Image 1 (cartoon, helix red, strand yellow):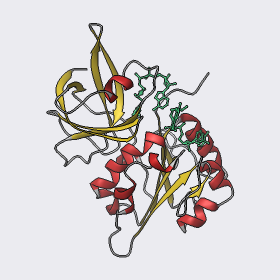
Image 2 (cartoon, protein in one colour; image 1 turned 45 degrees about the horizontal axis):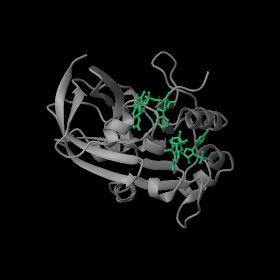
Image 3 (cartoon, rainbow, N blue to C red; image 1 turned 90 degrees about the vertical axis):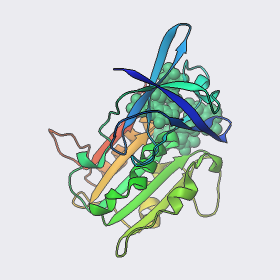
Length: 250
Ligand SMILES: Cc1cc2nc3c(=O)[nH]c(=O)nc-3n(C[C@H](O)[C@H](O)[C@H](O)COP(=O)(O)OP(=O)(O)OC[C@H]3O[C@@H](n4cnc5c(N)ncnc54)[C@H](O)[C@@H]3O)c2cc1C
Ligand SMILES: NC(=O)c1ccc[n+]([C@@H]2O[C@H](COP(=O)([O-])OP(=O)(O)OC[C@H]3O[C@@H](n4cnc5c(N)ncnc54)[C@H](OP(=O)(O)O)[C@@H]3O)[C@@H](O)[C@H]2O)c1
């Protein structure tokens, strides 16, 4: 895999450790939901890591959203970049968290924890989802309200006439009006999420994308299994596509 030079154009800090970067790089096409590798030279070697693209394909600037893992080799260095700084960008995008991988359905649930919201911002920013789905539910679970990155943009998503969209934020470590409390799997198990969504889960209609913390992905899949929903793979069709941002502990 090759690298191309990118230049940071904009940096936004949602909190001290939750950062978005917009990057100018000559880059080919990608499908909303895919990721690219970003890299920096550290002690003479390139350290590269995958990051989901937040921008829609039509946006000329690439955008990523990440949190700082203080002990990690790359994320603290990415967080220290400022407009004008250079960053290496992989020359291609990868990943199967894309609408074209999903079998046909009518209700799309995009469910994220933490920085896992990034690829869903790209998917809803593209707009082609409305060709395939009548209902969209955007679920974002974070610890504190300050980590509800892109909330204004997601709240402002409007469905075409006759279709429906709701943005459903959850806070696990504080309470705020207009948000659900606790973790996503618990809110599914006691149906608070479905009540707030005005929809239930049904294998015939529901299609779900899960992205972020691997423990959230695992526990949410277990909660959805109670409704008959299972992981989709090309060789064994189901209703759920997943992207995990790090490995589950062995
Ligand atoms: C397909 C894919 C897409 C990804 N997209 C994103 C993205 O859009 N935004 C993003 O923030 N991260 C994303 N990641 C994680 C990202 O690639 C890095 O692992 C992360 O930024 C930390 O990099 P690092 O080099 O500092 O530490 P690493 O050496 O990569 O990680 C050190 C340890 O930190 C833990 N860790 C990794 N990522 C996180 C995290 N986000 N939160 C908490 N703990 C973590 C893991 O246990 C890991 O072993 C993605 C990962 C994958 C596999
Ligand atoms: N965000 C911060 O302010 C903060 C501060 C210091 C350190 N950190 C570290 O930074 C890393 C990332 O933190 P983050 O808050 O961005 O992401 P995160 O730990 O993945 O948390 C995001 C959301 O996912 C929830 N979650 C965690 N495990 C889950 C599970 N099994 N099922 C369902 N939901 C689950 C969390 O709930 P819970 O709150 O119940 O866990 C939280 O609401 C972590 O390693 C963390 O220790 C974060």
